[in-house]
Image (cartoon, rainbow, N blue to C red; front, side, top):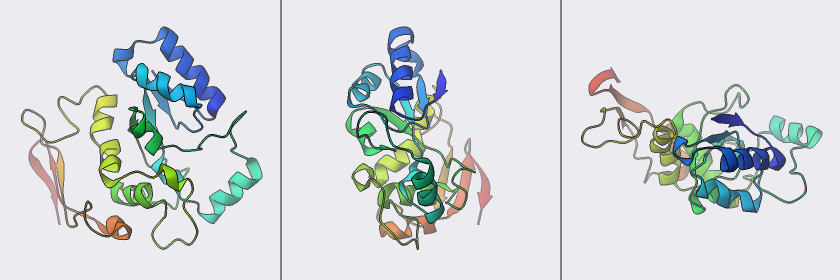
Length: 204
């Protein structure tokens, strides 16, 4: 199951449905998850639920900040993080991510721009402060959310999502080491070559 949830009441309802009537081995998924009650994190972990969380929502361009102030995105009943990322990793929940285009139009739609925001909470060149800086993730966690965790969510991790013997050779050669370069340069990384099932399908 793949259910879109927004707000802690919706999350609680879906988590209860999955926990009481779902099958853990199916890796049931909550999509666009924001505002999770403390007790629901544990139930998500216990029942092998997956969370799809938009990394791009961790930076606050002016139009988005104005929208939230006008329409409100506060949780119901208690203080919760609007877009937790680190909490999922800390609590043993598989998290995946996406670009969320066009809702985040004007934000990066490539994995390296998304990764930089997940790590820093800021769009390159943007003024302001990160939202929920305590929920930012490491570079390795960002890559995990954009690769192997997606394969696991789709039940294809034995064939794709990482590079190992027996899997399809789907990978990028990148012109910058995104694991060691300054964090505000991650967005500059470009694919030098793309391999799909072992065949080079793109080169600079």
